[in-house]
Length: 274
Image (cartoon, rainbow, N blue to C red; front, side, top):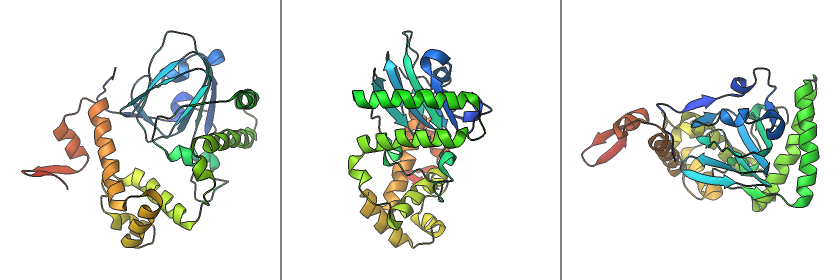
């Protein structure tokens, strides 16, 4: 069942914990379902979401996809996706990690998260093997203690433990990407994707993004074809179409209103960007 709203709201860590330090660690058994109840309506988030379930089930909608997360499975979501966690009456146990990209800024000068799986926009739950569960349980218990104690250097410790978890997920979800070097070309494409996420609503031409990246539009297209298999222009169009789908599925807005919001106007033979 899809619940529609007037607008898709943006949820920040400050809404959940005003004293957050770039990361929130929830234990579903100890903290209850409060953190998930904040996600019962369709929302965007300024943070990444990782849910690891040790008991029970959770039904989740992401964009136009549905997923049933089961015991001993973990799933992650990037901020740009429209997410809704469906209410369930049964008892759940597990962990929820919410963290901002800026948590890693000190480690990466460009401020990017260098984990391939976090750039994927797919509903892809994975099961942890017994050895991984044992390690994760120790790490997550330690992370929550650090999160609760609010020690001045807790942020550094939390970031270190979170890195272990994210590296494990990256290795399991995208094994083919782990061996690829993060060279200058890949960094340029990642920077383009990040800029596209910020400006897709009002900037539709590759030349704008190329100028921002201090490269030519032809070179940007060549990089995108080489690293993503499609042109920069197609990546822009795909991003706009994804947003149109989200608004159609999750809001009461009419097609004409969505077209105007996304910068299109109608002609006899189709829709064109303004």
